[in-house]
Amino acid sequence: MTKTINVLALAAIAIVSATALSGLQPLEHKAFGQLDSAASHEQNTTFVTGSATTSVIPDLVVIDLGVDTQAKEAKDALSQNALAMNATATAIEKLGINGSEISTTNFTIEPVYNNTGPYPPYNQYKSEFVGYKVSNTLQIKTTKLGLAGSILDTGVGAGANRVDSVSFTESPAQLQSVQNGLIAQAVLDAQSKAQKALAPLGEKIIGVKSVNLSEFRMAEPLVAYHTNAMMAVPAPAVQTPIFTSNQDITTTVDVTFYIGAQ
Image 1: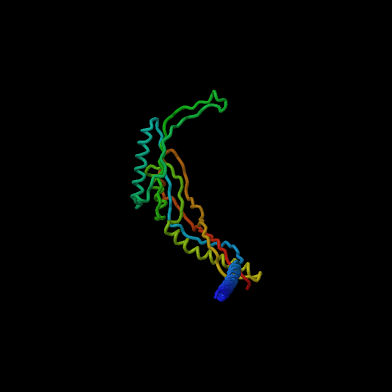
Image 2: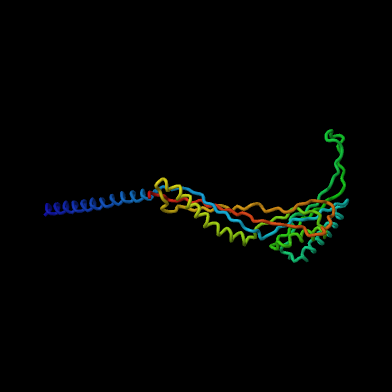
């Protein structure tokens, strides 16, 4: 009886060992199969930058003008400045410019000195206090481009004695619309460049790995007018002509393509 049991035990061990070994074989083949599959996905790539540019007519004018006043006492310079600036803002609003289109961008009060004498020698150099200067800068930002000349003339006639700049640019709504259209054009440009470069090499695009959008670039705002004066400036007899022109907006995209043989 004992001998029979031992024979049965040995037979069972043999069956279990055979089963275990047979189970290892498929796992080994499966592992090699996974490695081969992973290797097949290690494809060659090419990196290309595409760009697109369009020309648009600016729909926003930005005008910076201000009032500079000077007096012996700071309160007098401030009072004179406030009167002139209030008159300027009120006159501009009467043109049809609402309060949301007008803002203060800079305001300063600073002492003024009259510097005399040779420099050097330092012992003969004199700095004499003469009073205070108050500067207030107003910015008008509007889509009413046709009022640009009138805003300048009216502002100067009402009390502004400094025009820092007049520039033309795009409103956020127009800029967003233009940008959305340029993205697709830039991607197509990248694809075209890649195809032209790969064709002589016997390669072609077989997929896209990544697309990265770059910042949009646009020309500097067009500055149309500039003057600076401490004294009152009379309003011109005729309206100041202000002209604008088209501006270029450019965007770029970086695309990484998967490539393979044709």
